Image (cartoon, rainbow, N blue to C red; front, side, top):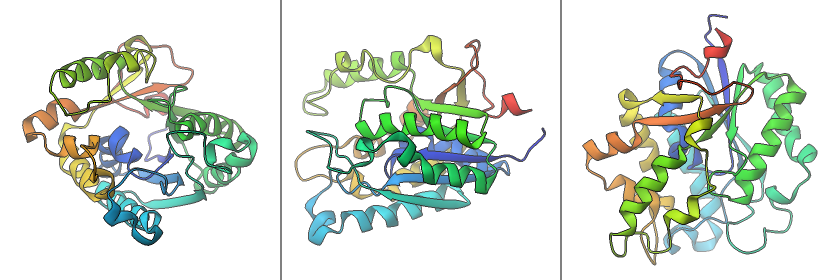
Length: 268
């Protein structure tokens, strides 16, 4: 197969696409591939400044932000499944995405994969990155849906654990930046270096990636402290490029070796 290919990027909440794989999506779109962004929830249980939450408006704000992010990245289509956001602290929301049976939660994704005749699907690693219950559900639902729809190429969007722990150790020594985050909390988060199959160079697409970050204004807002997205947007552009110029994946079924730069290598 020579391509172009169709990739469905399945995410839990608006802004997940920007943080984990915005550069990859922009690169694939620029290279002529069809990029379809599918999001399980509207992220209505996420943290944000009160100005974005007034009158229960956070879900609507985040839907608009997702559209702007997708446009910045060049996505051909945005699909919202409309499940409830489970929340990240305390018991999951009743009826939230993470509480649903995998078979039930996978139905709209199976339909989408078949409708798009998708060549590839991206999900998260089994840990759900940093462990959010909706992220873990994305892994389970995506794995099941790909098998049912016959989508053979499944890539887990992740971060090289060694690198993120190194970054957090640096942040730990800066008072007040992220006071509740510690490197030890990431001992089992994301994926070990030995599991990484793809390290994608997205340095040529950092303008689009940064625009995607900026689109998610509510996620960069806070009434009581710094947010990760806001901190990343404050980085000098040379440091932004150094830290965010590569993105990582684990291809299910591929034996790790020298990391590949082409997410479609197995299809060519």
